[in-house]
Image 1 (cartoon, helix red, strand yellow):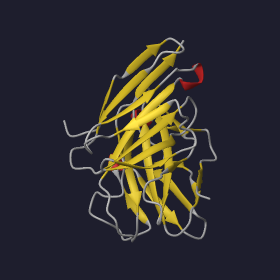
Image 2 (tube, rainbow over the protein chains, first blue to last red):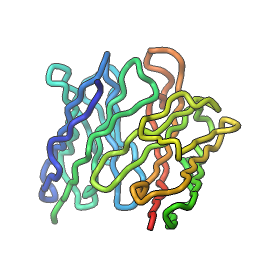
Image 3 (cartoon, each protein chain N blue to C red):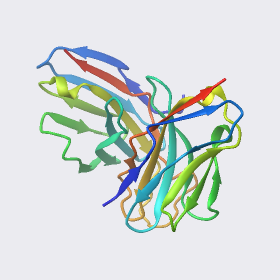
Length: 114
Length: 122
């Protein structure tokens, strides 16, 4: 079975501090991993993905994520948080052999305080 | 505009009425997806099209729900005899898919979402 877990419902961080939003996954075959961000009453915006290659992937708005196969994790990070980063973040996984179905976590609300 | 477009953005309907949502995917994308999202949850897969063929439907998609993509371009999602439990945001997404199991084309594998269509059933 394929699934994604985001263990934190909410993450609070002060502006300028580094942030981490956690994600672990379970999937058949090699994982295709994604992060999306959602602002209130909006759709999901693609941030970054890991398909193959370097375990550290860089994405939009200064975000990056590190793929760790042994820990089946794909944590989202940013060295210095901005107030405008406050939003809902979703991790998603797609299996290597299942092209059509993406499984999403329940989301983590990131609050960046000035 | 090169993004995924959804219409209407908001719909309030009375229980028992039918509603239809439209999605226009990114123009070169051959795959189209419908997801449903309720408050506090991540998107849940409903159905998927490759070109005009509907290849998979979730068990969440009861017989009151029907989706079409008649010419392999835009898609419609119709909900008949709406119930209060249907209240949610309906998200459309599209992607550039390929048939192989490899990495695929640049920009492929990623699904891009529209802004969503909010449905409130009263």
